[in-house]
Length: 612
Image (tube, rainbow, N blue to C red; front, top):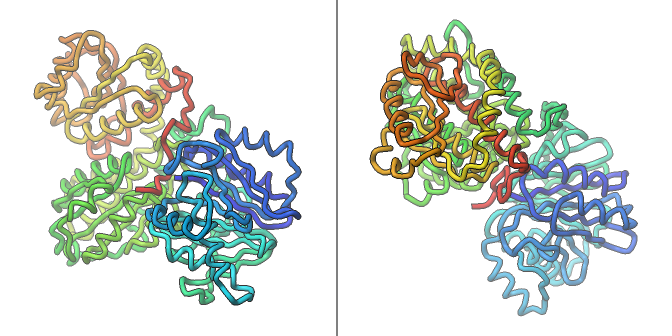
């Protein structure tokens, strides 16, 4: 969940490192720091607080090194403090390390190092790493040019958990060594420089050519070259990939916040996700996916596994797959999935959804599924991410970089991709229903309909101004609208810190209606014509008990008149979440703005959750 940046080249490193850290602020963090190699050795500057505070400290220092590493920390071991900030150095100040991940056996390793004379100055798991490297370096009797690499590899072999590491050493003052296991790390290259980061957008303005490391692969980086080694330290050849993202997509481009920009980018992100995969004649082609009819017919179950917002997209996917393809489908929270011994075999397809492709819980569930013989399919927004390299198949959403911590355009792109996947399955199974044909047509119309949905912004902003001081807000829906209610409630919690709950509207009378009192706010979603009258009745139940309501609908409500109503374009109920979530995203956004909060970087949250 931390962010890491590195640079090695001919320029002064510190401004490049600060720029990279600033671009990683969306991941969530509580402290920041850098280390560079100077003439007098490794210099470390770090502090609790924002990157801007670190930048002020740098202004008073003579830091001119052209090799450096940097870090934004989201606290796991040890409270936010300068001492617990990264980078960390060994007792002899010969190794500096920044680390993204968690070392699960750090107590055991710390006890070992304490017994061997090492002292610790922080409460972090990371501080053991430079000291463990120093321990192995001091035990190595050979003094060749691979001694530092061997020490790092020996230390990494002892680490249990996840890590992406950037390592500086006074023994190799013109090089940097990087390695990863279960945590993201990319290397951007030019002819004379190497840029390293946990996220592509942080260094996308410098290059579009990237090396992608697999687990336990080591890189020795110099100003104009990169050497790679496998777990046994045998040289390996690694080709770079070109990431065709527009660097300006990681800029606000006139919007007040990244989140607002990304909400308004959804017509474009949906068009890009549809791409050439779906045609008006009903044909559907998903690149590199070759699941045949016999395989799909053999399935006894599909699992969709994800966390948070991605899990809500999975709930929409479940409805689509079961409705169109008649294949039993379950949605599981990734952090629970692997611990409940799920029933998986070769007749199971498991679909994993992760915006970043680095979600630790989801990756662990994927590895479990493969070990039990299931085929695995990853849905991600990030090319070359960990989950895409682990899965048997990968399909990308093409939403472009999503910077705000609270997901918006990635969610709607995931929902649409699940719809396209359901159509692909139906075509492969030779299911030629009117439902599939109509759904295809409605998906192709969605980008224009999203543009229409965004025109409700004034009404949503005004309602947000009325209720932003609320302590509790409730969301209601039935069927697929309940799935959207869950996402709307999560968005509000994430960025406004208002307590909110989503309920299946029919469950109100079975307990939650006890919470409804005079002037409480209830938001109801009504897009399914089959369930419309039932949901209207449920909303009337809260109105009679004094609630003020906001109704979001694309249906004709007849004689029913509600005080606050957002009307959306009509579409197939299976993909209505893409439209009905738009006002909920804007609602959460404007409440947060009304409260004066940091919309893009909500407290305690991180964009890429790389720890379990």
